[in-house]
Length: 299
Length: 270
Image (cartoon, rainbow over all chains, first blue to last red; front, side, top):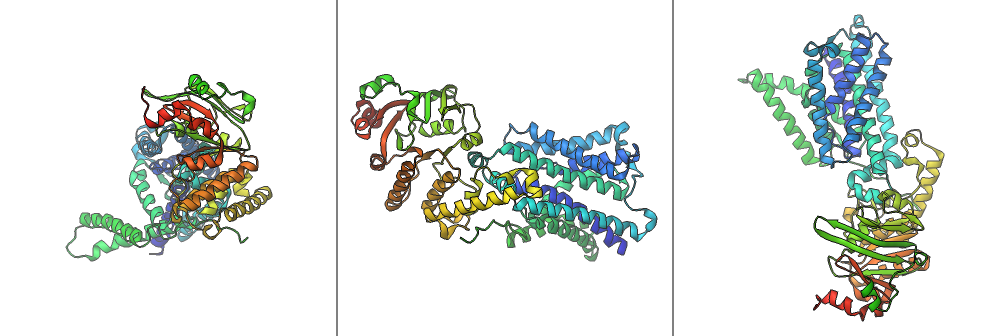
């Protein structure tokens, strides 16, 4: 049972990193990244291939994952700059599917649908509970570092300019802001965080395969960020842990209802997730932690 | 434009040295529509210049072109001796030429204070690295900008709503904020697009006084306005546009008596 709780917490922390990535691009910059799962996958594959087959040390693999995801983010962002904002959503959604399909078919590079197994772990598996607890500690530290980083960014003039760009980029340009630079910085940094999440995930499960990176992952993260609050450093973290807690709790709820088949229970669970979001947004339209404004100093 | 301008008794072609903003033969078409069809004028610093004309004359389109939001097909625009007709909106603002919007546009989720701060120029904390590591220069600048923002808010009597989101402001307060945030950019010249439209007469008077005050402080001001009484009170120089062209320019009395101007407003008989 403890192993299960630790497992859920590690997954929750990975989701928290993904949610933090989405807060930066969507919550702060207004860039709808529907391809979050793609950048997540890219990070996982970059680290898994380089460490498993390239035999580079795990920290190097993680660094490669961060760089690869940021670079992909830069390419996606720059190639859509001349288009309207909605197109970024379409392009990123396509990007995630391309990543998944390439991963399924380019067997020489990714192992195809069989995936990559035996990915080096962060803490020896022989440590038993210590493996889960140790990994949890490492991932939680990553979440904490990203939290501290985002706190600084949100309170900074950089964050303020980005929020202005999210609200109206034409007015922000007239205010003298280089809209393109701000957006590109935010998007690349966000993709780097998603890549980090992917790398850590691969090193936890020791197994990376295309079907782990379904579009549903991106949608779940949107739910988490929406529920938690999309422009507060703690919002995505709270939202992600709440989402995982909710998903895991409803896993058992289905068994408690008599006369419901497992398939029906799984469907009920999705309905409950949707209902849960409606309830949160009904009660707290801006999420559990609404956006905060910078107060004027006392004159 | 030359025939119409000559008829009004004003010099046909203004010279470059007359103005801080020089617009020359600017043209822009949207498909088959000639939105701007050879606009030429100068704006001098230290006074309010009026830009009037019937609806659809191209005044706001001209503002969009001058402020970099739209790109002219032809013609040149010089600001403070520097070509700006190929520059981006952010660079034009940083060069000292800022505009306001006709319908008070803004950032709905941001407060009055944040609006003013976002318009503050040269904040080193807007660089990503400086934002992460934090710098003394950024903190000092933030403090200076905050003082300026508070002073501007006090001047425009927005102090009591400084921490309110702009969506909570009245129409008049939004118009005042438009002026305030333009001032935050430390401008040399401001383009005002109907800064007093839709506000009560008392506030319109006050906005007019504020513009005159700014002009006496040395700013160049180009003002789009339909209220002719306000134009008459504020503007020593008036430019008239119609159908994408400059029709006439001169003192208010001169352009009011101009036959071509009267025709443009009343529909014309030719």
